Image (tube, rainbow, N blue to C red; front, side):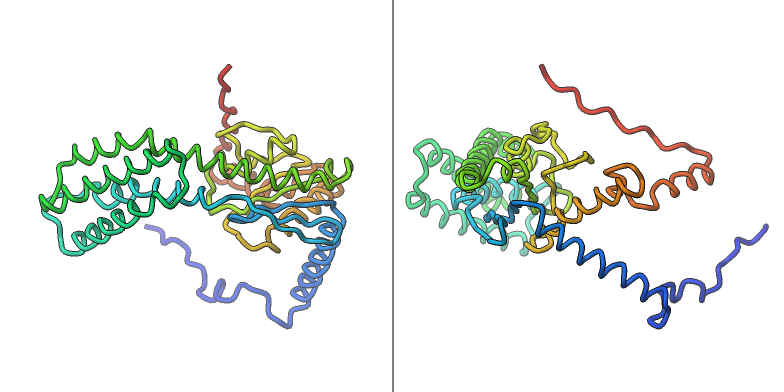
Length: 314
């Protein structure tokens, strides 16, 4: 049997350019020039807004303004929504008697539920919201007490509990979305009233999201509608489009990095047009087309065509 060739150990031990290599210095000069130009693009691109957690930040005319993106109500509703999910994560796929660590976790949650229930009257919920939170907390407490008393639980009991919480979970989620949308809208409309028509037409936004943000992010949807972007509701994702005015800063909650993303997108659009005649070319890896050809030749396989967009209900 023929042996597979093995690359020499030293071939990849130090792939990076040596600090004294003139090509490294040349590449660093490019990085410096790019960063300088990106800053100039950001300074001259008109008003830009970033949503970072509970905060909206506007940069306009060399000034920085802050405003709310959410209120405390948003976090109250989401915190209670997470309780059924926490119990499901803890109890699903567990069998037999409870071990001591699990009993300790459930006992701690039991105490937290009791304390949370006692705080509801101070939270200024509407009567309907208050009744909803009580239902979730009471059902959750009953499940925990049942599991602790019986030193275990029947899977069907957890399934029944989970199904029963779905309507209230979704109602809380919609109220949380309403809180964010109405809060953002009030802040942004007040800012837009101070802008000229030209500034409103130039306005761009960036939304800081967790890694692999879910399609339908509330702020992404809101900005898509208010800035006149393509809006696809819960199916909306950051697709590649020329002149896009709403971007997601994935896994970054740093203000400077969020605004740099907007400038990078604008600068790369200009470079892509000048070099390749394609505004969104640098949204793909520069090596992407070459890699596709190499892999097609190496594996005798063509890449799959993109999936068609989802059919919208009429």
